[in-house]
Image (cartoon, rainbow, N blue to C red; front, side):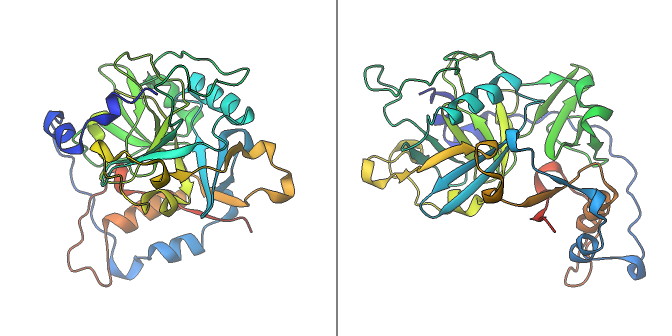
Length: 316
């Protein structure tokens, strides 16, 4: 269901994507003195408890595979209608017993109903889930201000004049258009659609498993990100049919079930914390990535949103 837009090959995507002109480079921030440098591990080890947050059970999906559990954090601020529908799909057991349909090398892993394109065979949506949703490619830039804890990066980005993180998600923005949107970085989860911009409903999802296909930004609704278990999706056998689809049912990886964490008894829920991206620890961690020491001969002095993954840890 809704696969047209995602069946572009990565090569053709890159060929069509045109990066926006880069704004004038800002003055380089001086590297910290060698004596004051801390490694990322040291920064995280000394971080205060207030710099970490718990997962919201209503915004967390648990995708259970035979090999383990994938944890997905949803982004209702950026895609409220899709997230509400995904909650209804999960509560209704829509994905239980369905499958991973496609694994395209250096691009995406995609899951949903194998019969979704056949109206006679497609699994019906559960009660409370809508078959049609509006496109949610962006939100007003004003909505990612202080209330979202937006932490802007000073580094130049070729795809947007402004980038940063809000509520743990990589965000790009354009003040001229008044838009802000979630970026297609590694681990980000989007809703597959057809040719019509409003043809996604969250029933068929994909996760980025390769280099960031930023050309998809503002073209598909992004609904969240994988925060644990990426290896269970990125290391699957690649599909041998066109665009990485599996051409035989036995090649697919089955989905045991997908549940909201709020539907799981509290004692059985994963106990994870996520680093706050509006925290001092996050700022220090980004600098540790910009200005490398130790083994590194060359320190880049630069970072961008898709090379800055947000850490998680077991709750103390």
